[in-house]
Length: 76
Image (cartoon, rainbow, N blue to C red; front, side, top):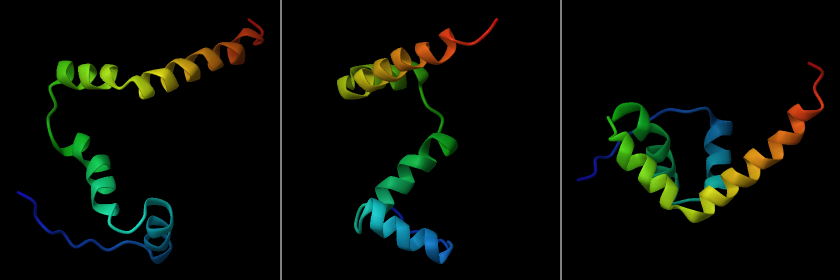
């Protein structure tokens, strides 16, 4: 069951939520941000869900491979 919530935010934040996220998609966006901070999660299940997201895993691999060059030139 869903509940309606009224929040107060800065006008610029409100305007940009509509520009960036889009009308009708703000509630799911905010819920996705808040959910991990207020609900206990089964970490094993959460990790399995993340690992099954092939697009996310590919992006994570690309990012991690890209950071190797960042540290290889650092003096020791």
